[in-house]
Length: 218
Ligand code: B16
Ligand code: MG
Image (cartoon, rainbow, N blue to C red; front, side):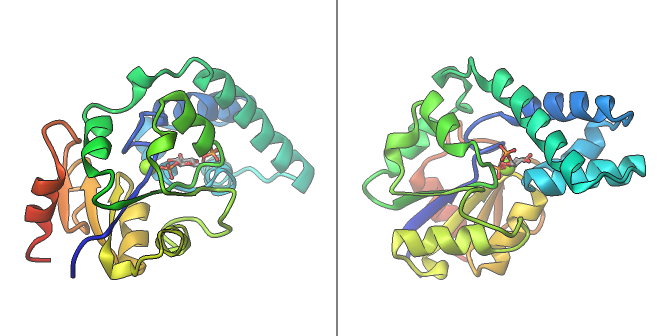
């Protein structure tokens, strides 16, 4: 089946916002008397803000009232927004802009991110104008590995799931793309993203031709 649509996750694929999420969650967790490791942080990648907080509370054996829960989410997001304030086009991950530029026009381009801050991040790194469709955490109510975010992205591109390729750095995101019936290119380590159809370590030196070649037999 021909590839007509490309759907990009944001954090870890187009920009490195994970380190800002980590810093803000660490600060929030510390304020709740909880500590967690970089390894545990891997589990927070790709999942929504509310699900991330639930995981952290679980690690610390903590329960919060509804009000305290939403206050905590807001505090984390305020710190996160402060951290991303100074983000510039330099923070687009290497090769991502060149890949998007060379894919523009041949494929429909969509964003499929869990982040509710996706639009402002894309604006800051000057990638927003390339996208034909944007689906983020404001449009969805189910976290990856649920396929909702990618299904909606394909719908907004006007394309069938089997015509779409997803780029994802998180295990939950790879599973979501597969559950949507799409092909998926993992961005990261092959042993972690082994459910993907192909894995790249980033977009440097990677172009649409190479993408077509890697997915030819899938
Ligand atoms: P926000 P992605 C995800 O982005 C992050 O990987 C995840 O760590 C974060 O909790 C989630 O966005 C929600 O972000 O708090 O900004 O709404 O990888 O789906 O682009
Ligand atoms: Mg991601």
